[in-house]
Length: 452
Image (cartoon, rainbow, N blue to C red; front, top):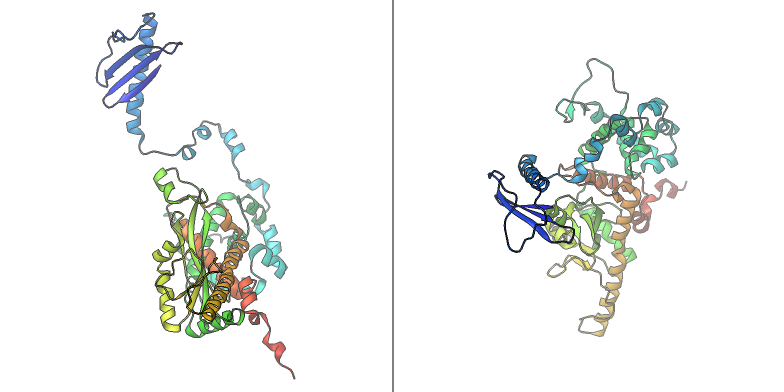
């Protein structure tokens, strides 16, 4: 038996085992069921029993009830969000499926492995777990601590608000714990269960402090000189141009390189939204970002959290990156090295790498030879952008996880925090391939050059 809704009417078909249609009934939604059969010369009904009549009427009532239920159901909800099977389970069966470590299986925060690591003051352990050494961690904590102590995420409104301790028990989670939680989270991948064992916190409490710490990091360091995303001064740009020219003598005006980065994103249940983030070349869903990298390893210009269907050159247009590079070119004469994905037509401020090393439009042989050498050096210099992308993903493996699709702005905040941490790590720790290659003198102790 098969039933379908056609506007204000419902059609019901009954099939025999040999595939022939035996009954075809068409009724309006407001009509009262009478005879279940519709006489026709093309339809042959083998038996007209009362059982078949009652079965047909029951099917019609069922279809009517389903039609009215759909009107009251509301907007469409994806199956992975409905959790129909999970809601049908008992409390015990649900508890067995919770992917969380309960309090009874955790050790207290005061005796956790994190507190042992924090007390060790070992640079190797700090860099391995957090990406920063002891001195850098203390400098970050000096600015992060007051923000943590003056705000709370436990407000009735669900917002992060200012507060002062007046009475009651103080938090067990200290500023160093919250900062360490954020930094260790950036250095790990997958579920938060492992972080529960490291910090000794329940899943809900850990999630609240993680969200709290990420927002405090962005709010604290978005304008900090060590972390902010800002175009360097004229003197710094001249220093960057000299660093590039020392390694690539023909690129005397290059001060930065630029490339795009695609990060995995969970597909949306809505096909229209899903289409925006789908990349047909790699057959997956992404968010696209474009970053510029300086010889000291920092990011001066960035535009991120763009749907994956947008081309890198279009992202640079949306983020006004081309306008910023043009302003630098007019002020200092500095140029940026890019790959073939970015348009260089009528853009004199871009050095474009070229895979065609044999062709040149120069009028003389000497100029053609010089042009080909410059293309080779531009291709070599553009590799620094690949180093920068690799450094970001190696320093913060969490960015390689697939982001959960949401529309509350969480992804934008997390990506901005990663860029701020990347700049701080390049300037404070110095473990950066671009910095170590182009500006190795920054890692040398000037006191060692003084001889008495």
